[in-house]
Amino acid sequence: MLPFEIAIFAVAALFIYFYFSVWRIRGAARRILENVRKNFPRECNIRVIGTESIPGDTAENYAEARTAVEGLGFKFVCFAEDETFTRANGIMVPFQYFRDEDEAVRRGL
Image (cartoon, rainbow, N blue to C red; front, side, top):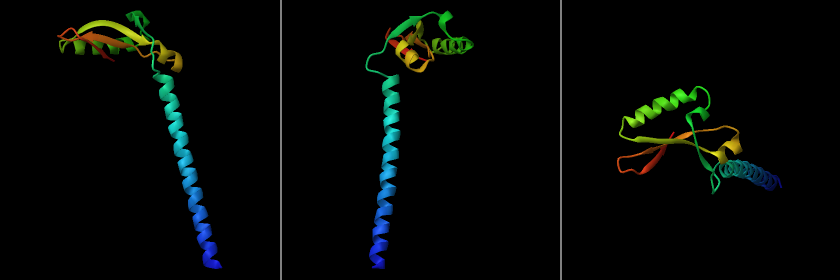
């Protein structure tokens, strides 16, 4: 009887290990999916903002980035924000729109 009991114990231990491993992985995957759906819904509300709306000292960083991108031949169009992302996370992340030499609009941070 002893080998049979050891085999049952080993199978039960493996079952419990794999069950909880899969359970934890599925739980983590669900949380990631919920965050992605919250931050990047199918429809976003993009609004144009002015330079005065850019938070704090990040305006200097955006100005440096703008200068660097314009040095590559792009033309600045405007600043914008995704209101859906701001509402979901409580933080505004502005981004900049530029035009390339073909007049196609490109977005950059």
